[in-house]
Image (tube, rainbow, N blue to C red; front, side):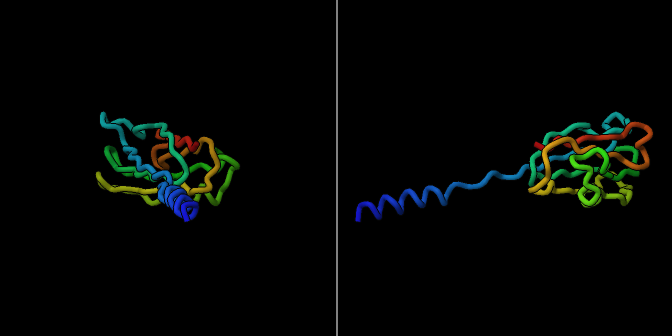
Amino acid sequence: MVFAAVLLFVGSLTISVSPAVAASYTVKMGADKGMLAFEPAKLNVKPGDTVTWVINKVPPHNVVFDSASIPGGDKALAKSLSHKKLEMAPGDKIEVTIPKDAAAGEYTYYCEPHRGAGMVGKLIVG
């Protein structure tokens, strides 16, 4: 009887441990000083985390992941993470959740209309 009670108690401790909570991050599209940049330009994230890009200055903007610059060159993953539609108004948002099975490494993205001006960012998935 005592053994069963101890087993039940230990089992309940194992069940009540909560899994790691996914984090949420915000990246500004267009720097506060009006530069064509993502703020922050580099961000460390984990699989399951959510990144929200928000139009801040100098629209239009979008977020396009470069399949040649992500682990494994996965074109399907790059496409699923990308948001090619141009967002125009300050406050407009683009939200992406990093897949739970995303490979660790650097994921480069850019704003299509401003890529030539250096509007490039990087998610470091680890």
